[in-house]
Image 1: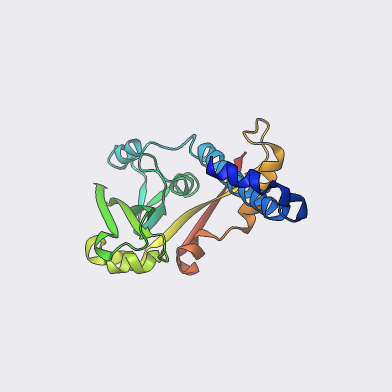
Image 2: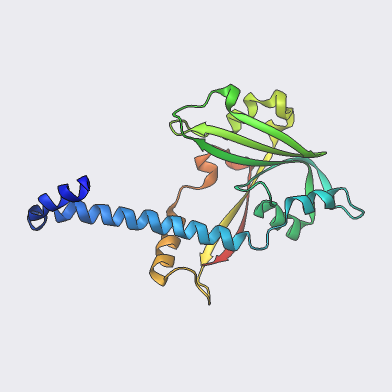
Length: 217
């Protein structure tokens, strides 16, 4: 009610230049809502065929497990109940998984800074498979390699040479779209110009493997 009263009392200023901040705010709001909706649709489409985590764990110890190769692989994930999309793609195309796997989830806390002692929590799901959550404050740079190195005593020395596997979604038109055409094009434009995950998390390019897939919007 207070905001509405303020706007109405200043409505006479809109034709004299007040329209400009309203226009800027409307454009910013449209971009944010389009990005949010696009991410929701892209993640839902990407994870529609996701492998349940427990199914994958059972396969590792089953009669016909996937071929394990030496090394440590870190897969970023947003959910803790399914296999990361990048791992599913790697398993589908290459038919192998690394000897040591880490499913890493990055969370932003609602505080400016998170101390090193509260940075990380880890849980072993199976031999050679670990689920890790890493927390950063909203005023901190999410330096993932430095945080992993600082906790090498908990995670093992191999994390310093681990490879990071990331999925990269390319939005494409769908015959049954979940978003309007204009919003789809806007989201695709923002996706092409968004900061890449390796750059955002300060991961050296030489340690990054990106697996791309097309996602119908």
